[in-house]
Image (cartoon, rainbow, N blue to C red; front, side):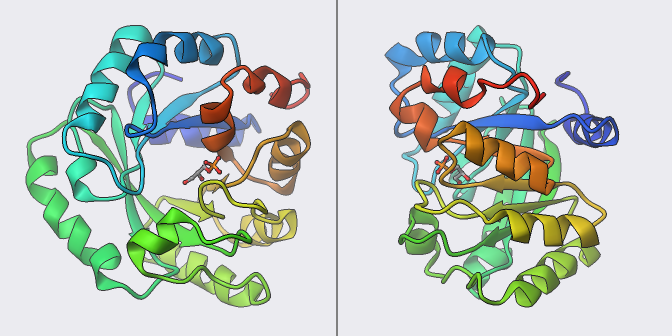
Length: 248
Ligand code: 1GP
């Protein structure tokens, strides 16, 4: 994937039925001294882009990590920020998130407004993204930090309507999130349902730590899958998770 027009590349991959894998690096958890080793693990595998972000990140840590990644990798770096303070123009793109599953104006519009001064003069590719937190079986940091509840898996129609509303509002991606470190990843049936009704690409993430779970998410229709915690705990696990050449 080239650094230019990240969204076009996502659409192109979808039209070719090529599944995308993103690795999420959290600036407050990633040891910069181990980054080179981590990037080596990523380069040996079919990783398409790097997401950078976390629920709470200390000032300046995102920029420091992005700068260091840029020196080690040519993969596109896309911000996935928990708050506007994590935005740095040194990345290539930004998932401009609206937490549509919740009813906290801070994450529906306030953070977006606060982000504007950093976006106005940057060349970041801004990708509006409907962010939908669903129940992953544990209380996750998105829930804690945003003070919102995840959507219940028992109400698939409401999740679908939330995703469709997100699309009608002009979002270009839907990110179905079970939460970082989720016990249960997003169910395949939910991914399939959304996929069958949406015209925009679907990202699934949260709790994916095995080959079966990754393959299941792709088979259900996810255009992109995000892996964070499993890689953070053991970068070498990536090889195991991707152990089937049929995935790509
Ligand atoms: C979190 O969806 C991402 O926002 C990735 O989740 O850390 O559980 O892989 P994990």
